[in-house]
Image 1: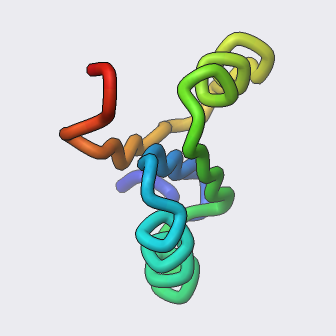
Image 2: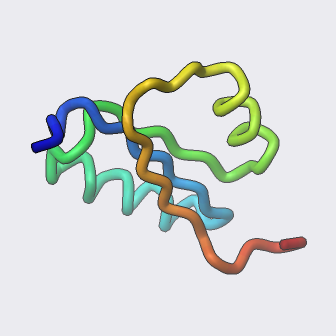
Length: 68
C-alpha cells in the first residue's frame, strides 16, 4: 500500500476562492505531505520544471480555463 504521507497535491484553478477552499479541505483530510496551489499557468510550469519530483503527484486542475 502506498504511503499517504509521501504524496504531493497540486491545485491549479483560475478562481482563487475555490483554490483556497479546496486547499483547506484536503489539508484537513491529511491525505498529502505537501500541497501546492497555482492560479497562473506560468507558475505551474515553473514548479514542474524546477522541482524534481520523485513522489506521486495528484493534480487537481480546472477543466475550463480561459484561453484553453
